[in-house]
Length: 120
View 1 (cartoon, rainbow, N blue to C red):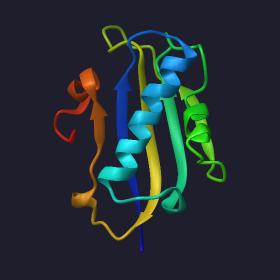
View 2 (view 1 turned 180 degrees about the vertical axis):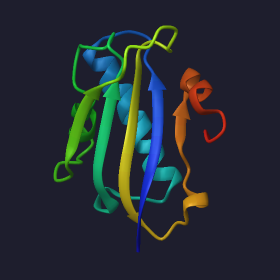
View 3 (view 1 turned 135 degrees about the vertical axis):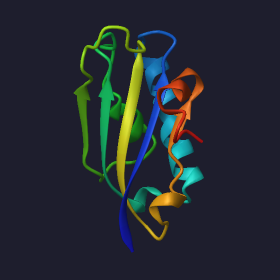
């Protein structure tokens, strides 16, 4: 079993706690499903949010999905002029049999433009 990192992102339409929870839940669910993972395979998840998001912690969505015994941390993205607004990113560390090239990184909606080289 190898340790792998899975990336993902989603752009929110607005800065509201319920909307953030819905969108981050969708992102986490897609990351797990596309990589054949369960919560038991997770080691930890880093969440980042752009500075214009402050209605809630992205990690709340993971807890509401039942990911309750996995270390989670939230941080703020760098404030870079011209960067895409209202974006939540994740970096999930997992245990999996997948090779690095087999990992599906998930960029939903407009966030796919952030990493068109790896978005699936």
